[in-house]
Image 1 (cartoon, rainbow, N blue to C red):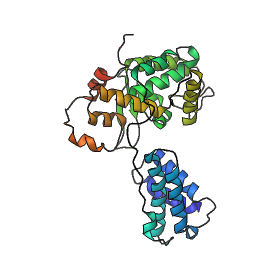
Image 2: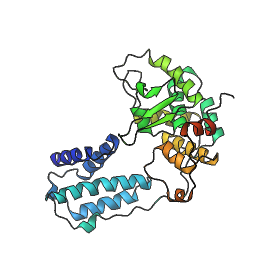
Image 3: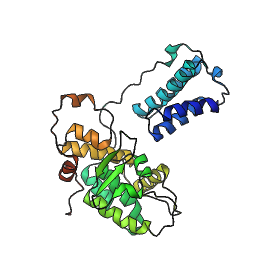
Image 4: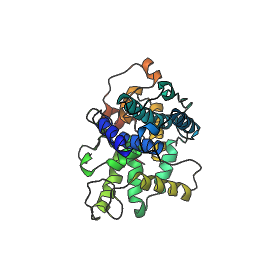
Length: 289
């Protein structure tokens, strides 16, 4: 089965999908195809049971959709190349969209509180990560994949590399830049063969697990009653910018979303420069207290 998965992944690599999305596709397909040697072993009941199991999972609707889309795309590929015969109806699925606001939104004062608790030198890297995540509304994978040369210290910007048509340059707030510069002093002392912005003590590129584990430990240590993850921080800054009057379209651009939500169709778009808006609206851009 591995041969067929590799063929499918090679096709996807030329379709414009990001490397992280392709990796996610491979992981879900391999889970679905576990113990199967050849495509003909995939039965309609296998797909129905997989979709049902995914629907029962306690995760976001977008995560469920990715899990199902990966398997659906793979099966469609096998069917189009005559390696698999199925009733197409078994590939139809519907994911109920999440309702309401994202959970565990941290207020501006709570973000300030978190950062005030990690001023010690041992938290230099974690503070820089939180400041940058909040500054730029980053996904955890964007922090992991950030390289030293993506950060422009003079312009105070960060290049987020997704794909040729989805790369974006984000302004970095003053306080985030100060935290990063403090971390870079420590970063230069670490022997590393990678250009990664954030590295472990042994010089390896930091992983999503490293980041989320550090945030989890911090949350427990400070006895927070909310989840503290990169995604929660991302949701929080998006909410704060919206409340401060930033336009929906600019927030979508800021977060790197491919599509606007339905409600933004009714929003009048004012052509405001993204950097000027971040400088004005971002709660961590003030150099004061």
